[in-house]
Length: 318
Image (cartoon, rainbow, N blue to C red; front, side, top):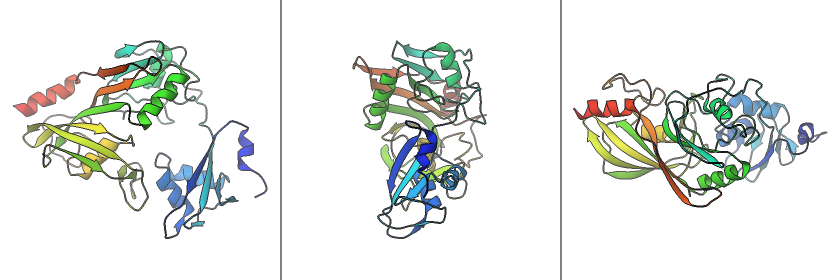
């Protein structure tokens, strides 16, 4: 290779990611990278390879390069492109707590957390940029201050950092499971027993790349979800979920995997029978526990159930 691909991005830009191939059987570079980078699309991973940003044992890799046990793969991931349309927008935010370091929001259904090419404005980040003038520059231009995510139609507690120090310390709490996140949801059917744990690696669906699934053969990332039965509601159940990990769509994927998909989930539930007009998944981030990233005191936040959630519970209880 004649040129170091990292040089074209300048010092300090981008991220060098080192991976090791440990499977006994060979596998194509592009397919394996897609399995290891579930948040990236197949097309984006292939673009990295085509642009010479992936090295296998120090040499430029090709999509069809066969990986063998012990191979070292290096991926140079450039920083996200700046979004010129990311602008502050006035928004009514349901603020559960705020000080100079963090802000905790009770997110409503239908609100996307951060912008993307297909969803350029009207996101929580747009509203936060209007509310907090010092957010730009924290955690990059795409997700300023965002510590963890909630799906567009999932409601409830989400914490946002207002300084780089707070961001780093909160991310460590999420990674080391110091922070606790408890969700409530209505699911189809009644699970066996009163509590349990779902352990299954989560990765891109092998056929539908817009979905995630419980996968095997080292193609996903470890995920663990604990559940507890709160109330039986005829053909449905009210459950609480607690996360050990934070994979994309984790609760929705794990619930569907054990045969009890979230009520109203348009992606992972095939159940046509609904007790009422349900427009989105009935999943709510009820509790968020953490240590204040600067003051170090224990904090617990609770977001009341949305009106639509309460209405469905009332109907099912009748």
